[in-house]
Image (cartoon, rainbow, N blue to C red):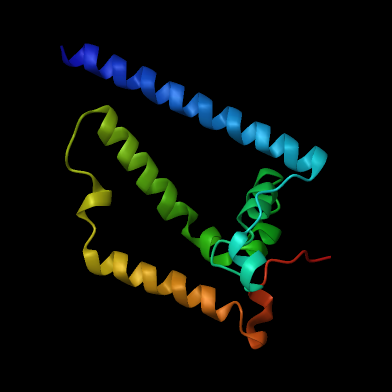
Length: 140
């Protein structure tokens, strides 16, 4: 019975991965060929940069192995990528094996509060003129 449940979960996982990959490639194709991007509505309305501004360009730079430019587009997310990938892998493996002891859920609430404060502070600091190097721009 457990083997059958594992196979069902594995097929679901493969389906989700396939849908995500197709979506990413389609968006990347539209971005490269037609310059169609997901706009930042926060930036359009306020003129300020949110903590997520530059993510699309960062991912595009990562796909081209331009790590310096990827870091310049969104330093906070770039530095956070190893942790994000570790959480995704941990959640996926534990879901696949039907375990309840996920590292992601065992993190203390203080950690999540500190992370929220860091992200909000990053959003504020990147809009201060003195810290204009945090604005997601292209370096020539």
